Image (tube, rainbow, N blue to C red; front, side):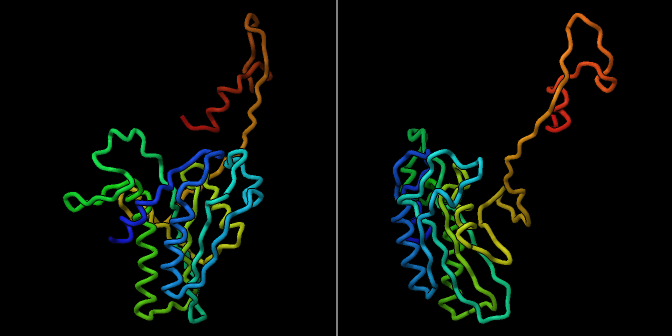
Length: 231
């Protein structure tokens, strides 16, 4: 069984903050064993909720019990820049299950395509980055800089795993996320931002003629918001 089909077997569906762990720890153990066999130094941890505090993207009560993050480091020979390979192991839920022609947690090859929950987003990508690092190690190819293979949880629901990894100290000079977007290679990501905009209006009586808002008349904040949020 290949690596992609093996990862599909683990139930790592996205969850609400109060859901119990699924098979994230089993998946971590499996990849961790492969990492050790390839000679990488490993760092596996369950993030503390405080690691993601201060971000409004994080749902209240989110915990990481039973949902470890993983960073495997293949040491470079020295003098080069580091490279991060990053991927999330959670997947969107498989409901409605009756719409599937095969078990979503059992990978199946049909007509040359691999079917199963997460084969595209993004257990297939995780398999690619893990396998690439293993091949380099097997061939004795060492990059000048460190190669870090990082798998995270909770991308689908909040982005908590990525934030937890950054605050844990996962760093690199460059990064590759092998998640397909229209099956194309993209050189940048817009990221995620949750700002607060305050747009003020000015009240006025509906039965009284008003000068233009620029001249001190009534003005609606709803119309002004159109300048902040493009239609």
